[in-house]
Length: 180
Ligand SMILES: [Zn+2]
Image 1 (spheres, rainbow, N blue to C red):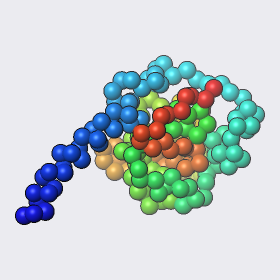
Image 2: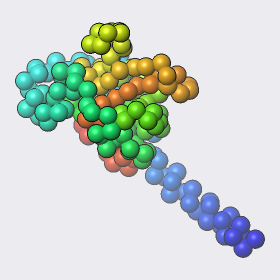
Image 3: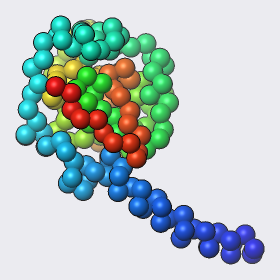
């Protein structure tokens, strides 16, 4: 009884800072229309030569993003990232996924069921014997991963992403300006 009364007192107090804080969540920013990044139809493609990307990225980032390599499963700390926030392209910083749409696929790669609308481009890829759907950042063209049909609701899709191709911005931190 004591405990219940205590909870009923602190619960409303606990809600206030959370609600205020969420105004600054990168994910919320996208939903409220103050997202500094325009919609997909307005995303201007960044045609930066590969040799320039090679200068600003690590070797591993470059190999995954611009030579379509795949990182070793379980090698990215982002696979275990569970905090709220936003996943942005590690090359050009375009926000691609919200943490709310990430799930544990137990594959060893960060996995999402839904991307931010219009932020990805896709193509068929025949690197393996069977065709796969490759996806990449709609702005810089950097390779992110492959789409599979064994994901959870609501899409049934698994966006299997290389962690090294993403950067995580936790809730409350400002999204970095797009890199040009
Ligand atoms: Zn990008």
